[in-house]
Length: 531
Image 1 (cartoon, one colour):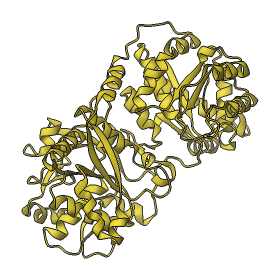
Image 2 (tube, helix red, strand yellow; image 1 turned 180 degrees about the vertical axis):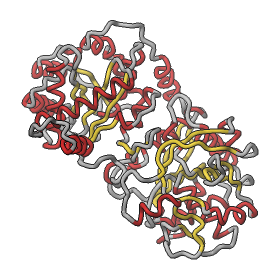
Image 3 (cartoon, helix red, strand yellow; image 1 turned 90 degrees about the horizontal axis):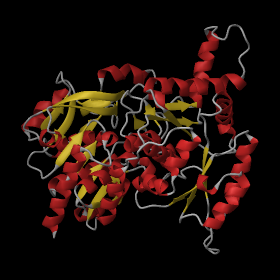
Image 4 (cartoon, helix red, strand yellow; image 1 turned 180 degrees about the horizontal axis):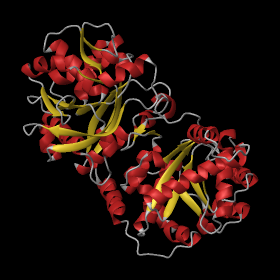
């Protein structure tokens, strides 16, 4: 089933192999015909994770980066759309030598080629390849065929792991393995015999269940790995190692045992479990209706948690629906109960007036604020309206005919929008930023030059920069040519920072991110003042 934890399992396997001294790389294979995740609604498929090179990918690439502290690029991401696009392009270029091009074997061969390319570029000793979707789905069949063919091509170097859910019916109170048995049989019918079974469940898997699954799939019990729910996803590789996964998986891959060192994650797990204090962080958004908020804002939530741990506290996340502030303005008072508030990225006009009202409240009440991408843009509009006196200040995205578009379309984006050329055409990936040495951002980064990842079409309109600065807004970070505003601050506020980029993508569990670390520190200080 989807969202069962395949991405975390894949990232954990990579972390374990990496901790044994081997080079590892991850690939996510998504079944949809989209070329990438960039045109899919966050509420439909979860957040779009942006890589260093600008790839708009599945959120699992974020898990890979956070667990292994390695950069993911478009080489680490494969979709059905990419595969068919490449095969058709090569057919048009006569690269198949006049042969007829068939779904099998040519589509699976292209999948295999991409995995091999990623391995060569990353110089990885081990590739961990995750297939999205569910065994038995029509969409996944060609990827399973590629996996089967890889096993034939590399018989001693390919192993398969199945992540399967063991339900515990509430009235019975015991785990049931029949769905997993059925999944194993279905996988067998595709010509694949799993070498490992990861048993996702609410609680650790009972020994009798392990014995049953072992019998069904002809595996020794040390290949049946318990994967219960945990408080933190960073506990997962630690738990897997307790099951002896590192040694077992290296033996399966015919790799020599090396001295293991996963002390960093073990120490993190101990630290997180020992923390008793909490800080209350609100997240003002609008993608709450269709899918889990955790998926929609995954990297933001992880960045908040990382920073909280760095400040020896835990974050209590409160979801704040901006549309409710539009219909019931009195609800804004709930913001006063927050120690700090994050306004993450987003698109479109729905709920933006509620977000602007929330930002005004946070600014006036001295509540720590961190705005990301759209958060910076709406904070700029709010400041222009209520501090600079530009009452009709708006964004081109919100009101294309607005008189005062303090946020407007980037010049290189205008033609793309007119032609409806939306796929992979935003300002994407890492760009440099120069910080003002009198800014809070400079003091947090401890560096005048930084690089962060972007995903946007709109920017602060330079025609309004003087007015904003004259009224007290600090343009704390800009592009090296000073043409694009990257960071805004209000120096007289305890913590009020907006970024045009997405710092959450570079946050790591062992270090946090400078801006999030500073935001949480300010939120803790606010908490103490309230008390």
